[in-house]
Length: 182
Image (cartoon, rainbow, N blue to C red; front, side, top):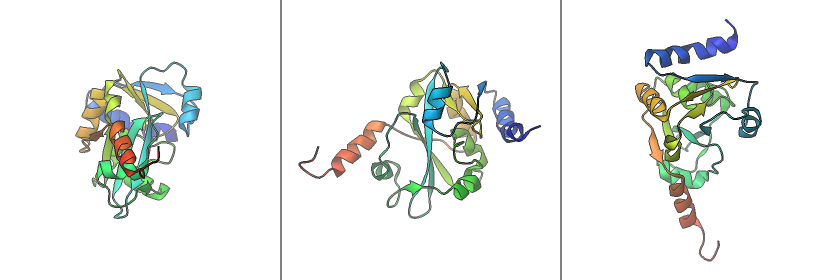
């Protein structure tokens, strides 16, 4: 068993235990959305990006959004109830809390947060896709599951998502805009 198989095995076992069917696509390591877009070809479904963020009280969130979403962290903090500004969580905290490295952040990593230190936040439009594509705890493959199966997985891992819409962030950002600026 190589390192990738060892990293992926617990996830695949948990998916099987829950009766969740997944399509797996193998590919070279991907570190960015741009690399993913260049490599994936015609892989169907919603493609995501994941943000691991923290607030000044050192509370953590895993935020999953469509890959092309632009997220204003100052506005997002109001939507998710953070204290003070959000910043990206350190790589060490990411590995400690979710058991993954930068470039491999995925909603499936909530299975590693048995202490419940990280809240899961999901942008609602992703639920409209037939499939959602995410890394299987490493960045050398992509797993596609239905939105319902993803929801069942995160709920079984005691991480029911806080659902939000991108319009909520845009609305908060617009309210923060000084008068007379567009």
